[in-house]
Amino acid sequence: MQRLRVPLDSIEVDGATLKSLRIAADLSQEALAERAMISAYWYRQIEKNGQQPSLPVAQDLAAALGCRLSDFTVPTEAAA
Image (cartoon, rainbow, N blue to C red; front, side, top):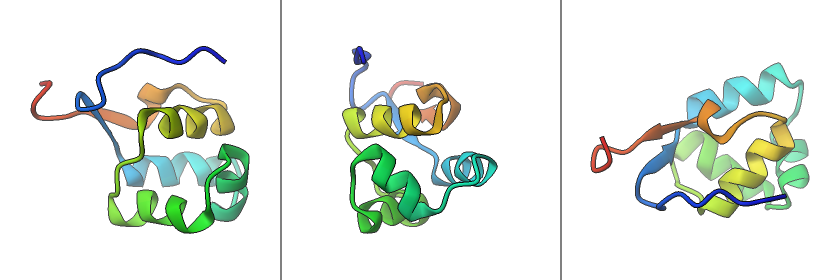
């Protein structure tokens, strides 16, 4: 899979939107984490506590969900 070249500080993951996409895909937190090759603990931190993953992890989450990165990210204030 080709990685996008996006500055790390220009986007952030919206945990609530990510959760909605996960539920729509009928995946548990653990199943999505496994597909994205991250720990379930780390995924929960992203979804519930607003922790920001690295760009490669965010791209892996998008691939695991079968969606675009832009479906669950928003521009940061610095980029807007």
